[in-house]
Image 1 (cartoon, rainbow, N blue to C red):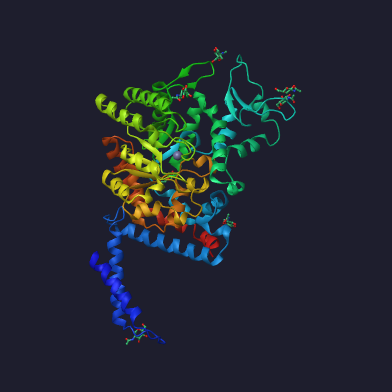
Image 2: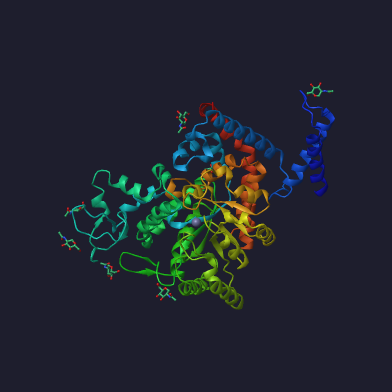
Length: 530
Ligand SMILES: *[C@@H]1O[C@H](CO)[C@@H](O)[C@H](O)[C@H]1NC(C)=O
Ligand SMILES: *[C@@H]1O[C@H](CO)[C@@H](O)[C@H](O)[C@H]1NC(C)=O
Ligand SMILES: *[C@@H]1O[C@H](CO)[C@@H](O)[C@H](O)[C@H]1NC(C)=O
Ligand SMILES: *[C@@H]1O[C@H](CO)[C@@H](O)[C@H](O)[C@H]1NC(C)=O
Ligand SMILES: *[C@@H]1O[C@H](CO)[C@@H](O)[C@H](O)[C@H]1NC(C)=O
Ligand SMILES: *[C@@H]1O[C@H](CO)[C@@H](O)[C@H](O)[C@H]1NC(C)=O
Ligand SMILES: *[C@@H]1O[C@H](CO)[C@@H](O)[C@H](O)[C@H]1NC(C)=O
Ligand SMILES: [Zn+2]
């Protein structure tokens, strides 16, 4: 490598030193050819550093690759030509460009592509919140905080907060039965607006959009305390991901020592292991019709809690892990990084957790939301050095070259969620999102969608589309990203083998069949692209 760099350098010097200005450069065609050879070799060496560089493509994959490249290049040529902000796609705010994305052949092909696992999802926002508004409101006992303008209810809750009450419970002021409110014209539409992020939110800053985002979670918290609501939403979500050809799901779910239980209308409570069983029962049910589906949960506290509360949550998570080792596969403390505690505040607790887990023989890896910050990159350092097995977002890591080396060595996967980072105003233009630098630097990256339900994305395909176009990914890159999502999942060894084998079979099938999805849509694409 050193020699090659020198060769390039000396070529540059010789061209600077000639001094005189000629109509056409005096450099011979052979010298130019030499330079081009050096350049190609340089790029080849550099490519060897990328994750997945060792992958050999089959002839089907090579055909797919050349289609992918030419499709993306022709889209880019079109976007460059139009120079319209609204169509300069990966730089356009996702809610404004979603319909266009869904209109492209690339989207249709990516939707069919077997995408392995979605490793970074929050349960309450993993699938369309339209479901909550359309079906969820009809569940027995569903109420909405919808105080009348004229009444005198102090608004301690955001308008549109959901809750469940049985017939004998006293309802707090301002809550009305959902079925009653639904008779009002536009009620469901207004509520949906409060539960989602859309085009008009583009002008908000990161802290402002986080406020809206946090309010959405407050609004749906009460909805997801009802067992029936959780069950039905879970099934709808799994089906949405299966339809997107994603077969493995890992959900961050609340796991607090002191709150977050599920309830039946009659007051029956499901906490900790019992709450895990509520999910397990639905997984087993879905297995009958979708034998390829696998689901794991990542117990989550929140980074707004102080360290003593975090410790109690860690202890509680260990206890649940001991009771339900098959379903609980990780621990996290999500939340807006720039507003919550830095990870270093929890170092003592996380170190103790590590020691105690070892002593008890409990393996509950840290899968920490870290490195999603505008102001500090230090959380990525602490997360990795404290032993995290995966990093949620992690885009701040590119500031730390030695840490990146550590991540490569330890095999710490980075859960990259491009659209989330754009919607929450961290990276406006996805072409310069650090995810691609991570991939090119050989870090194990997976693509996920975080809270797709809030911005009306489905499954993983929108995020794959943005990454593919913004970063001009190859078939090898896509294969690497998808394979990583199984490799770095929380599945245990034998499950993982089985899931990997299934995925390989589906991938091969897809590579033999993808053209049929494309050909059937060709006329539509012409209209979009030309
Ligand atoms: C060098 O290459 C140019 C462009 O390809 C060509 O027009 C020219 O004839 C070549 N010159 C020699 C000396 O081969
Ligand atoms: C989608 O494609 C159709 C033609 O196939 C076109 O009429 C329509 O405007 C497109 N919509 C968007 C949002 O690009
Ligand atoms: C407030 O709205 C609810 C639901 O539409 C209605 O039943 C109730 O009568 C209203 N109360 C007042 C004081 O307007
Ligand atoms: C509304 O509430 C405030 C404070 O809770 C109280 O002072 C006021 O009298 C109330 N107004 C009416 C019309 O009930
Ligand atoms: C309603 O809920 C309360 C509190 O959870 C419970 O104590 C009560 O038994 C329930 N009533 C009915 C009729 O289910
Ligand atoms: C931590 O938070 C809990 C709950 O809010 C509170 O009761 C406790 O006093 C706090 N501890 C410290 C040391 O601040
Ligand atoms: C992708 O999903 C669709 C719809 O569920 C299914 O028909 C198709 O066979 C899947 N494709 C592959 C390659 O698994
Ligand atoms: Zn997240």
